[in-house]
Amino acid sequence: AQSVTQLGSHVSVSEGALVLLRCNYSSSVPPYLFWYVQYPNQGLQLLLKYTSAATLVKGINGFEAEFKKSETSFHLTKPSAHMSDAAEYFCAVSAMNTGFQKLVFGTGTRLLVSP
Amino acid sequence: ETGVTQSPTHLIKTRGQQVTLRCSSQSGHNTVSWYQQALGQGPQFIFQYYREEENGRGNFPPRFSGLQFPNYSSELNVNALELDDSALYLCASSLGASGRSSYNEQFFGPGTRLTVL
Image (cartoon, rainbow over all chains, first blue to last red; front, side, top):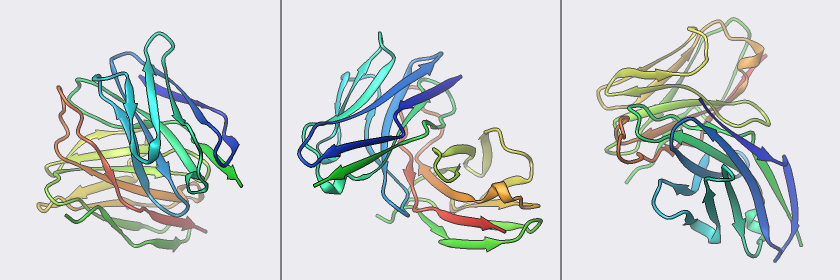
C-alpha cells in the first residue's frame, strides 16, 4: 500500500521568499514520486517527478524537489516565490516496477503568496 | 498534439439520476485513468482502462463504471447518484499501463465538475 502525507494544508509566503512544501511518503515498493500544481477551476499540471534517476529533481517554473529515502520525504522548494505561484499543490506516489500504475495523492497544500 | 479534453465542463444532477462523463485522450495514448476530487481533497483513483479493458480499480462501488472505445476515448458512468458524488472528475491519459522499467506519465484533462442536488 502507498500513501503520502502533506504537512500543512495552507502555506503563506511573501513574494520573493523561499517556498517549502512538505511531503512524506509511505510505500512498500520503490516509489515514483510527483508534485502537481492545480490552479483554480483547472486540472492538474505536472511540476516534476522522481523516477529513480537523480535524487534532486528540477521541474518547471523554478521548482525542485529532493528524494530522501532515509527520511521518506520529497519536499518541494522554490528559492523565490512569485505571485503566480499561488495555487494548490499535490504530492503523489506511484509504485515502481509493477504492471499497473495509479497515482495516490495527498490532500494538498494551498500556497498563498502576498506582495 | 491535442491534449486531454473532457466534456461537459459542468453538470448538475439530482439524487438517483445517472450521469455520463466523457474524456478524449491525448493523441497516441492508449490508457485512460479516472480520478474523483472532492472539494478540498486530493484526487482519488477510480479506475483505469488499457486497450478497452479495465486494468485496475480503486475503492469505488460498482455503480461507478466505465468504457474505453477503440479510439481510446473513455466514458465514466455513475448510476444512482448520491450527494457525496459531487466532485471534480479528472481524466488522465498515458501511453501504456504496464511500466515495469519506466514510468508512463499521466496527462490530465481540465475535469468535469459534477454537482448532485
